[in-house]
Structures are given as C-alpha cells and as structure tokens.
Image 1 (cartoon, one colour):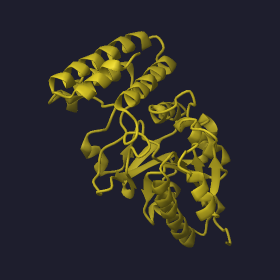
Image 2 (image 1 turned 135 degrees about the horizontal axis):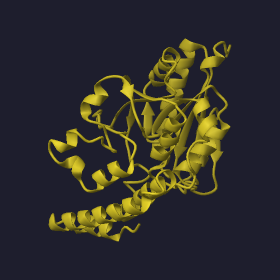
Image 3 (image 1 turned 60 degrees about the vertical axis):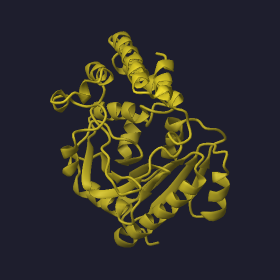
Image 4 (image 1 turned 90 degrees about the horizontal axis):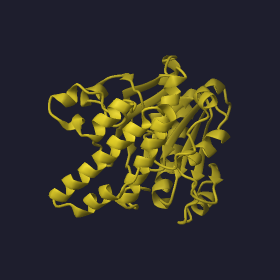
Length: 309
C-alpha cells in the first residue's frame, strides 16, 4: 500500500477471552472496516488481537485463519485491564481503537471515526452509538462515581420518579443525551476510539482492577489529565455484551468483582470518604438482597447477600 496519510494510521486492538466463534466474527468485520477505510483514506490500519489465555483454542484459530492479524497470545487470563494494556503497548499509530471481541464494527465505523477525530480536534476519546444484536440501542456510560453519587446509586435514589431526573446517574445518562453529540464523563471500553496521546499520558488501564470498573477508573484519570471524551450518534457499532462474563460466570462472582472495583476506585480517588462509602455500599447490597428475596428471586438475593466489602 502507498501509505500517504500516516497521520490517520490506526490500530484496532481486540481483547478476547474464551469466545472463539464470536472473536472470529469480530475479526472478519474489523478486516472489512479496515479495508473500507484504507481504500478511502489511503492510510494504514493494523489489527492486533490480544487473547487472554483462552482455553477454547482461540489463539490457534487466529494463527491459522488470520495471517495478516497481529496476535498477542497471553499464557493466562490476566484480566481485562492488563489484557487491553498488552495490546495498547504494541500499538504505535496516532489513533487507537480498542474493542471487545463481542463488538462488531460496521463497514464504515472506523472510517467515520477517523473522519470525526480529524474534524474535531478537541475530542481525545470518541464513543459511538452501540446497539445490541437486535439493533436496539441501550444507554451506557454515565457520570463518574463520586462518594455522593455512589451512595445515591446504591440506595436506589436514581430509580425514584421525579428525583431520578435531577440526579447525575453513574450508570447511563437520561436517554435524550444520546440523541446528539455531547461529552461523557466515562464510557465503556467495549468501543474506545482515542488519540495515542491519551494512552501515553495515562498509561492505560489500572491493572490492579481485574474486571469491572476498569473503564470508569481509567476515564477518571483521562478527565483529570484534561482530555475530553465525546459521544456521537452518527457512527454505529454492535455490542453483544456479556459474551465472556454475564453468560458464563455466576452472578455472585460478577457482583463481587463490581464491588471490589467500586471500592478500589473510591480508595484510590476519594480515600478519606472511602470507609463511609463502603458502609453505605454494603448496606445497599444487603437491602437489595432482601428486596430480591421478597420478589421471589432467591438466587439473586443470595448473590447480593454474599458480597463482601
């Protein structure tokens, strides 16, 4: 390729764990998006897949089927944070897109993302419209969890009519937010299109977080370093969601991981308030256990009751 626009070169980093068939589809769609963008922009797009020690022979499939894809095959599952960072350290391009293996790019997703970043110089990280396998949009991202917001969330105040519209939600903005371009406080890294300077300045994910809250914590440092996270509904991708986690792991395990991540976040960024936040967090989890028990959902009740701080 006559690589003319090196300033628009991009690396797509795909993180995969134990979902060989899903990863296969993800790579094929990423290759189609790469080909389409390169044909118009005359740039170079590299695809790097980080396999997090998958026991289902994902790495072997990639080696056999995708000779033009760079593979980082880890010997064991080191977690989402360390897995993503392994791919980010390899990337040398001005732009980097990180996606989960259950995120499927459309043909024009990368092209439009690069064009958006080129024309929006103040955007450092870009989040796009994500739909599920039925092409339905579900809100994501939200406000960063300060102690007050976390207490409000765990006590369920965000669900009370009228009040909920006045509170800055940790999980998901009000739906009207997603109808136009705007700025986000945190966005999930299932699709995270960024300038390389963001990684260079922040060093990526905090590898002390194995799973959950890793994206929130990183976005906190991204914003602390004066970078901006933008959202646009004009670009779209599909995110299946939970292929490596919710569909394969127990609720109690996932809840514990989420709680661990939340507490780590507060101890790191709000250490003085962390003990108080922890008390409210535990109380809220126990209240939810009672709530689900009364609803006749003993499995969920048991999961919430088992979580420790």
